[in-house]
Image 1: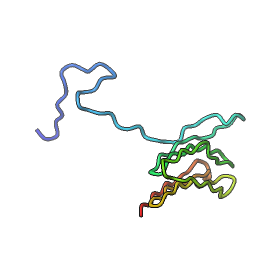
Image 2: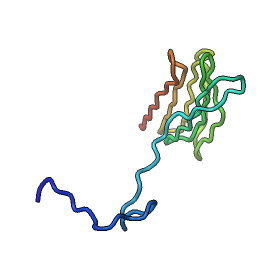
Image 3: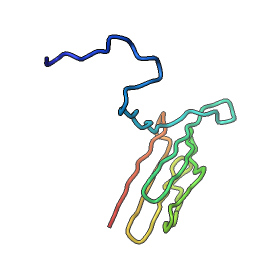
Image 4: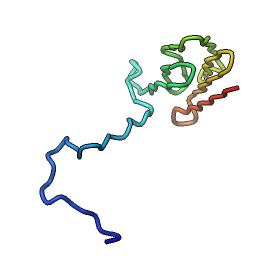
Length: 116
């Protein structure tokens, strides 16, 4: 009948799911971490077509922790200000760009992929 859901007569044990059901992929987000000076910073890893970049952002500061370009890609890091950085992975056909910064009261990022 429309609007009704078939509910199993006995509950499933916690941690199990029906056969054939896959869990959703983790939602990448900013992870709060100690900044080592009594405050909070935020860490995040971005996965792009051209490679991966791990970043760290806190009020007044943005920095790249690690870049891992994929085979055939070059990485370019450009500091826009103390609290804004742009990482670009480039090959002959693709550009992957991650721009990140501290924005007002929180970390902020934009990811752009261009394939030509």
